[in-house]
Length: 118
Image 1 (cartoon, rainbow, N blue to C red):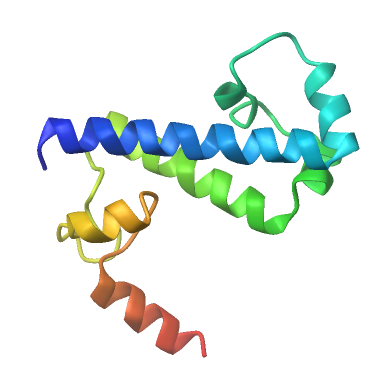
Image 2 (image 1 turned 90 degrees about the vertical axis):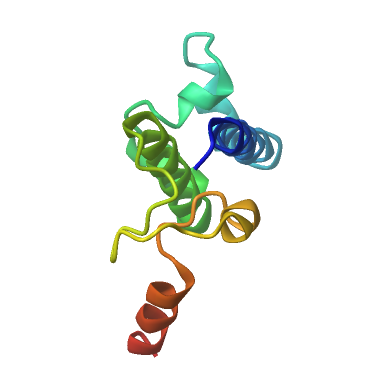
């Protein structure tokens, strides 16, 4: 996978993370109070900190899952494993990563997993 594409995806992931946290600050008073009580930091770093019980309640399950997937994708970029399916190890198509930059699996493995979970 070329470096330019990976750099573009890293920026996209960081922007998504910042957007989720910004939306939470605007829409949730508890989350806003938690963030305001923290030392001034880049918003993208907030989700990487240890999240206490109040913050987990404020975030909600769906956004928390997305933040974890985004953090996982950013870690895979640092490790040089971004774009590889965690199940079979094959490359995830760039079109899929552009649509879902935090995708863990190729389309084939994801389809099998979804069928199994029905």
